[in-house]
Amino acid sequence: MSLPSKHYETLLVTAAAEHVLQITLNRPESSNAFNTHMAREMIELIEGLSLDPEDNRCILLTGAGERAFCAGGDLKERKGMTDQDWGKQHLTFERMVRAIINSPTPIIAVINGAAYGGGCELAGAVDFAYASDNARFALTETSLGIIPGAGGTQTLARAMGERRCKELILSAKPFSATEALQWGLLNAVYPLADLLPAALGAAKRIAANAPIAVRQAKQSIHRGLQMSLADGLAFEIEAYNRTVPTDDRYEGVLAFNEKRKPQFKGR
Image 1: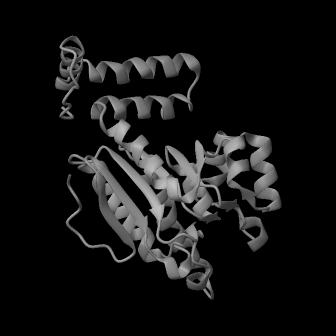
Image 2: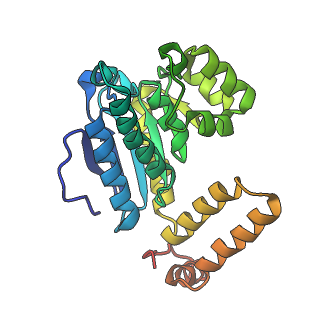
C-alpha cells in the first residue's frame, strides 16, 4: 500500500486496507469546513493520485470526529473578503471539485455527520456515498445570498432529479440521511458504528477487481450519461477495447478457469 510522502496539515491520509486509501478532512474544530489551504491540499493530493495512483485502487473520503463530515466553505475565513478575493478563492474550490469528479480512482464518501453547503456538494461529486443515520444535509447557499458553486446544481440534479434538487436548493431546507437515501443522493445508511466498516467493505470489493477495468467502467458510466445513447454506446466500446490487451484481462480469464482468485496488477 502506497501513501503520499507529503504530510498534509488539513488532511489525514491513511491506508484503510490493501489498495484502499482513506482521506479524512481534518479540521474538526471548524466542522471540517473547507478553507483555502484545505482546498489546495486536496487538489494536490487528488491530482497527484490521478497522475500516479501507484497501487491505490479506491479512496474513502470522510471527516474527522463524529459531529460533521464537512460544513462546506469556511465562512469565518470568508468574512470581509473582497469580491476579487472571493472569486480567486472560489476558483480553487472549483478546481478541487473537478479533481474529485474526474479522479480515475473511485471515491466513496463516508458521511459521518453534517454535510452542509459544500459538504453536501462533495456528496454529489464523489462516485457514490454512504452515511450514518444521524447525518444531516442541506444546500444553504441561497440563504447566504449565493448559489451552490461546487457542482451542486449539476451533480445533485443528476442524482436526485431536477424537481427535488430545485426544492432543496431554492428553499435551503435541511434533510435527513433517510431522505437523502430515498431521493438518490446516498447508496446506503448505517448506524455510525457500522458506517466505516460497511464503506471499507465496498472499497475492498472494488480494489479486488482489475484496476484498469474499474477505471474504464467508471469513465464509461460517467461520460456516457452526458451523451446520447448512440454516442454512449460507442464510448463504451472504446473503453472496453482498452481492457482487452491488458495483462489483467488474461489473468482474470485464467483465474476463472483455474478456479482461483485473480491477482490483478493494474497493467
